Image 1 (cartoon, rainbow, N blue to C red):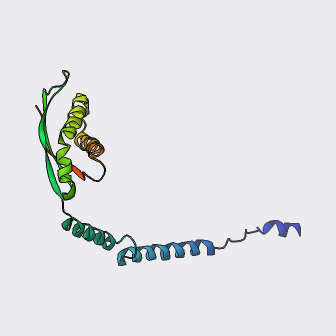
Image 2 (cartoon, rainbow, N blue to C red):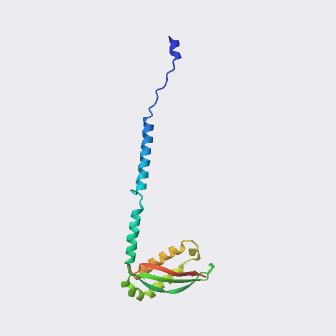
Image 3 (cartoon, rainbow, N blue to C red):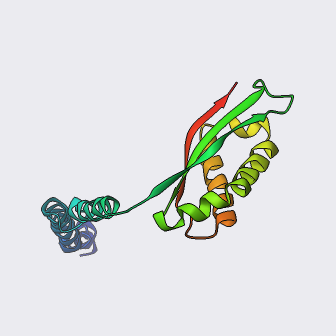
Length: 162
């Protein structure tokens, strides 16, 4: 009798495939739902950004601004630089009500810009984004001098190193 028991092999119980099938079905349903939500515009829709851009463009059409010219500046560069001079010309974007006030303090604005540009190192001009960074720094200094709300933007008309 013991020989008969040795001849039979005990087979392990088969594991259920239900969790695997359930996982695959849920993944397909989730992927299909995500595709439909994106395709139909429920999520990640451009409609919201289009509405935002439309509101901004209509706001810019109704925005009244005035421009105040900054006298051209010629700055002599420090000796290790390849360029000898910096020629700078800009305009300030101001609200129409503040135009006269900004024009009255233009000598202070020129002084601030002149002082800042003279303090720069030649290496400050080498980075590709240098002009953007310099513009932001100059705008901040002009806003401090002119008072908050009097200057909206600084527009660089000429920035030449020679």
